[in-house]
Image 1 (cartoon, rainbow, N blue to C red):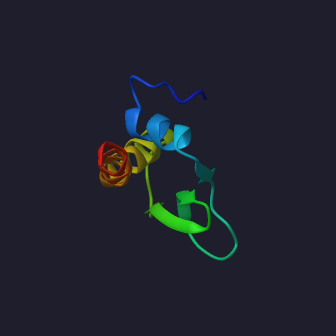
Image 2: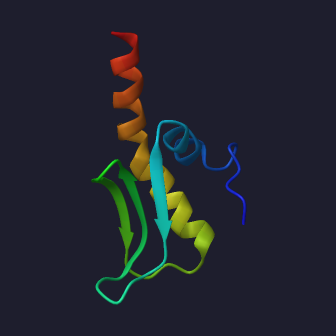
Length: 76
């Protein structure tokens, strides 16, 4: 599945700004998607979702504030 910018604008912007996206659960937790900037966890989706599109939509929503802060820093 490709992440399309029109659908997941915040994810695409975050990736352009150096964010790493991890998908999938581990033996240690039930996180379905995580977003890291360097070593800082900046967004995380846990729980049960019906499909990957739903997970990515939630992650996209969570990244809105982070992207806004990055843009504000660039303007100053």
